[in-house]
Length: 125
Image (tube, rainbow, N blue to C red; front, side, top):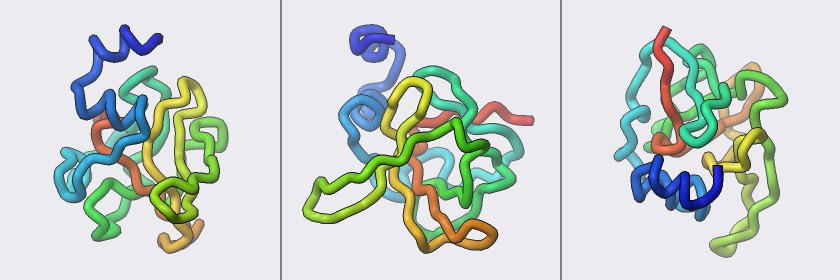
């Protein structure tokens, strides 16, 4: 989808996050405290990204997962914006910004994929 199509499809906040690498306010997203079973899809292209089985409460204020649904779902890119070095997470299929990944998550991976709710669509089981 091009930028105009995404502007028509997404809320202004989702467009800002997915297309301009924005961030939703912590503890404001609809999936932060959601533990329904299912698969989280990209809000832009509907690609499968994360399973509810990998979701955990990180206390960060954003939905957190210890792994993506598979290695082909996401791309991780170095991000030096805001005066710090982080790893940005993007949808591999459409390049939408999803959030960031950190090395302080639970086992078995030790990762914490900190993802904006507005970039996701949960397809409940």
